[in-house]
Amino acid sequence: MENSDRVNTVTSTRRLDGAFYAVVGITALAAFLRFWDLGKQSLWLDETLSVEFASKDWASLWKVVSTNEANMSLYYFMLHGWLYLGKSEFAVRSLYAIAGILTIPAIYVLGKWLFSTRTALLATFLLATNTFHIQYSQEARSYSLVVLLTTLSSLFFVRAMELRSWREWVWYTLITASAPYCHFFAVMVIIAQWSAVAVLARREVVPWRQFLASVAFIVLLCLPLAVYLRHGSNGHLDWVPRTQWSDLPQLFSSLAGESRLLGLSYVASCVAALFFAVRAARTSDSAFIPPSLDPLRRSSITGISRLTAPYSSSFGRIATRCNQI
Image (cartoon, rainbow, N blue to C red):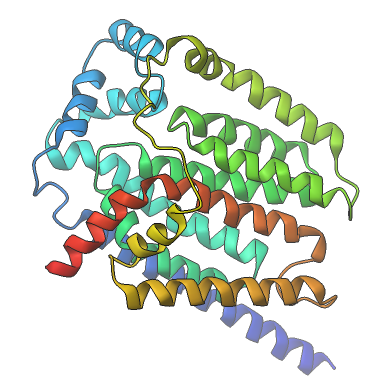
């Protein structure tokens, strides 16, 4: 009996060591891909304007952010401090390359918490080599930062709901409240998380006191953004078209680089994933996560989908360009 326990312990330790080294290796690959030729191209228009805003003194920057550029305001303040390291293309973009790299281990922890080590490693590798994530991690814009924050938000949301620890809820509140200040679209992930609680309440006892306290503080901290959108946005988001069901085929086509064959493979993969997710949810001995956390898993998937959908047209142009090289 003791020998059997010892063998199981050794096997488990080896698996943990193997997963750790795998994550380190994948993260190193992600770092290489995101820092490769980082400063080769000149800053484009939006990056140049970002550097111009961030170069202002604190008082002037606050005036710009509070009156005209509340979207990505946290990004501007972070870039303001980062510019002390230099204003070259490499220096300016490196902050957001680092944010993209940090998302890799964050995705692993989230995937392992919700599913399994194998699934987490697969998700980590897919994100590390994702063309869109590499592209936007090499831009001096807030996109890689908002992906990092929403990933961490989802992680602490799941942990807080399961562990019911005030410390987890505090971390969730602070990170989640920060995300919309990097980009307004982060709100879509928050809505998906909170919607999952309504489904979760049918199966489990929800820690309502902790959850509602967190929601109240998040709303309070994000209230300035709501006021800005109501009175001072000046139509900055008018260029974003309203999402329609007819955009769904274009989304898959864009993700596939305008390739019909790859687009069909994306659709087939999503249908298969949905099928297995539903089957796992109906199985009492699901190998992925406890049935009570299924809504949280779906909320993570839904939130990420909503967050990336508005950029599908840009993604398509990038993927098409890569296919032509």
